[in-house]
Image 1 (cartoon, rainbow, N blue to C red):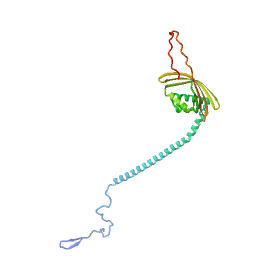
Image 2: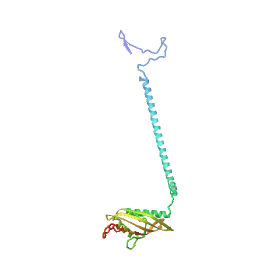
Image 3: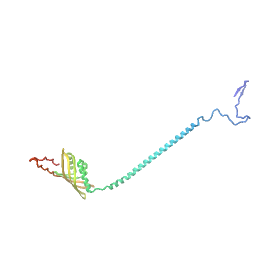
Image 4: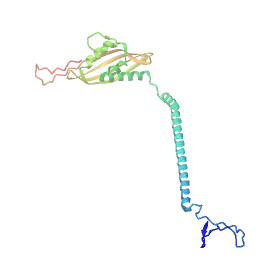
Length: 253
């Protein structure tokens, strides 16, 4: 820089140079006015680095946890599917073994069961169930003075007409005898009937003989002969006045 002295002359000022007292350079350079390093505290920077590292560690742990959960879920699903498939394979075998353990019914027992099934359907008015125990060419002989009923269709019409007049039907079977000879069997039994017919309480007893045939491994009735037992008249009381008759009972149906 140039400066003016007292005489008005301009003199140049020299910038100090890095020389020692003997005119030799001492190797030191003056520090600049501004520092070249950051003025931010070092503790704050370290905390940020710690938080970043911790956040990254937690994220990694969560990812690993989710992967483990997914792996366990897949293993559980695979195990359940394997057990279900194993159960499907073992079920037919178990059902086959259980069917082998069942004791087959004899022909006499099958006929007795068919009679119980037939009488139960007859009481309930279940014509579809009743149909399973009668053959298409069945012959029905009742206790009245009438020609036999031939064929299931004709018998069904008569049965439905009679059943519509009955309520509170009860039919008990006793003293059953069953005989089987090859594919043919017959049975006879006594029956006790009670119902409300046309609004009046009616009771009757009788006997039935049926002939059955084994068709398609199933016993069906081919002949049903039902007879009505005669009623025993009540004895006249000894002290009853002459000419007075006891009350008459309703005629059997």
